[in-house]
Length: 330
Image (cartoon, rainbow, N blue to C red; front, side, top):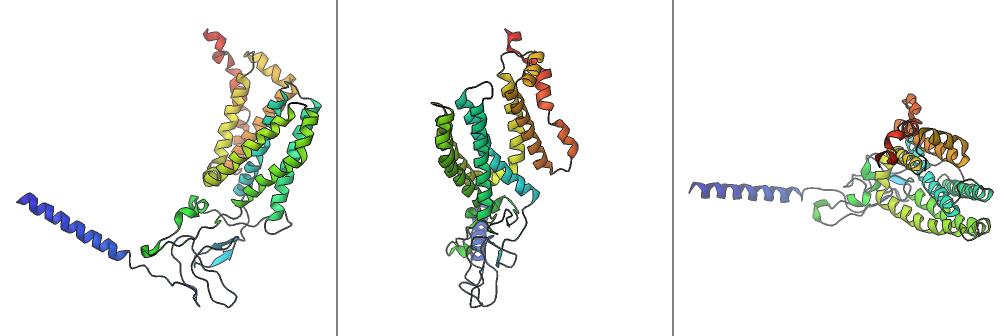
């Protein structure tokens, strides 16, 4: 009998809990439809737009280039991009440039720089720069290399589609918008322009400079650009918060992989081979640049002494190469 009374009491408590919960979900109130006086909207991104007749629109998504403020009014994004924002955009510009250079190098299959390869490097660099400039000119204020933006407040700003409210379970309000304008959309425009400019400029030059092999770098780009676009669409917010560390770790791993591919793993050969070979020297400086880029982006130059660590991965590999040489373990 004691157990039955305990079970009945628990069932009664659960019934009261669910009845209270259901009643509380019906208590949220907001003004539906257009209003004469601005009032709050549900959710995190739903807002009201001021119409020409002086009234406010129903709660919904703000127009492109606008974002909801604390009073639920859609206001123009007029913030200045932060230091971190510019470095994020720079990282997204560096990605296709690095892929282009790697694809050109692999298709050329040359262990030393040649005039043709250097010309293709220069063309790829010009393509990326032109695409970046045109992307900035397209966005507000149009015709200027400066852009206005909305500050990124948290990770949810990159995924507003996951935060459409359903007040009182009466129907979902679709308030999906670009809350991080223009950091999300400008990357899609940039990648598209990169692809178009590449097809217009390098598609016919590469075959002339590297007969039989130059076209392979174009084919590779036709694959990695869709991958970059899809990755940005899904992982844009995660990349925004982690790109400095991605750059640092990737540069260290890539630097070690490059040295590991050298046939002679002796300390002297690795050191002198890097200094005497122009291609190796450029690759080394490229790794150092990426390492510095990641450090500056992560610290925002608050700890400049950390820049002294830039050559450390290369020096560490060279100085410890005799301990990791596979020939010593055979």
